[in-house]
Length: 402
Image 1 (cartoon, rainbow, N blue to C red):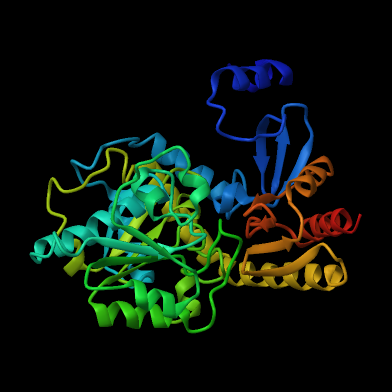
Image 2 (image 1 turned 120 degrees about the vertical axis):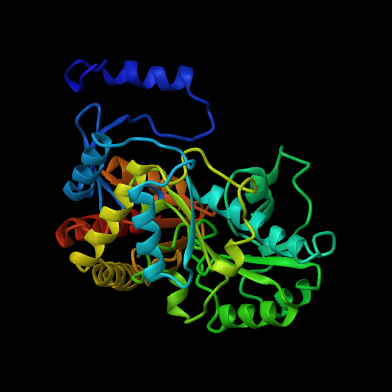
C-alpha cells in the first residue's frame, strides 16, 4: 500500500485504537511523514517536533545521510545474528571505543536491554571472583528510569512504574538522587553495581549537585563495587558532549547507550573495559538482533554526521538559547518554578500538571513531552533551524503566560 492509497485519517486512527495495546496515552493524530524538525499527520497538518522522538532523532527526521546509509545497507546485508561478525557492528564498536572510556561493546536493541546487560555483567564479575552469593545488590536512585523489562524496572526508582508487576527481581535498593551521604550508607560489601544517570532525563531533567558523580566514584572504589552510568537518554551528544559524564570528568566502569545512537533505528549498547567484558564468555549473554548491520550503519552515519557538521557545539548553543530565552521570558510567570538542562535537553518545571499545556501547544503545532507530571521536556533535533526553534519557544512562552 503506497502513501497515495492510505486510508483516511479516521480509518487509520481506528486501526490503532482497535488493534494496538492501549499502553500509550496518545493524541488523535496519526503521523505519516517527517523532515528535519517537522512532522506531518495524515490530515496534512505540520508540527514542530521538540520531543526528538524521546531524545532519539538528534539529526531530525529523514536526514539524507541516514537515509543513504540505511538504504545502502538494506540493499547489501540486512540481518546476520551474533553468530557471525559483520563489518558495520565491528566498525561501530571501534568508533564508540575511540570516543568512550572502554574498549569493549555489547550491542542490543534498546536502552533497557543495555541496562539488563550491565546488571548481568556486574553479577557475573563477582560470580567469577567467587563472591556471587554475597555480592549481588544493585543500588540506584529514586526518580530514576532504566527501562521497562523486569530487571531494569527493578532498578528504576519510581514506584509508579512498579505497580501491578510484583514481585520484581530481588537485590535492588534505591537512594535519593544527588545525596552522596545516602549513597555511601547504601553501598556495602554486598553491592555489585551502583547504577546512576549522570543527569536524570525521565525523572525531570535533574542535574546532580557538583561533585556528586565524583563522590559516587569514590564510594564505589572504597567498597569495591562497580559504577554504571545510564546514558541512554543523555549520551551520544544530547548534552553537548559525546557522553554526559564528561561534564564532570568522572569515568564509570560500564555505560549504557541507546536512543540517539541508532539515528532513529533500534540500537542499544553497553560499553566497558576488556577485563570486565571478558567474563561474558560464549553462552552467558546474547541478542539475536544486537549489532544488526542496518542499525549499525545508521549509527556510523550518525557519528560521522555529528562530527562533520559540528553538531555537539550546536547542541550546546541551542541549549543555551532555550534556557536563556525561556528563563528570561518566564521568570515572572508564577506557574514556572525552574528552567534547567544541558545541551538539547531542557526541562521547564511547573507548579501544576504539564499535560494541559502540552495539549495546548500541540494545538498550536508544537510538540513537547511531559515527564514527572509537571515538567515540560524539550529535546529538539540538533539540526533544528534557529528561526523554527525561536517560533517554538515563542509558542511555549505564550502558552505558559496565558
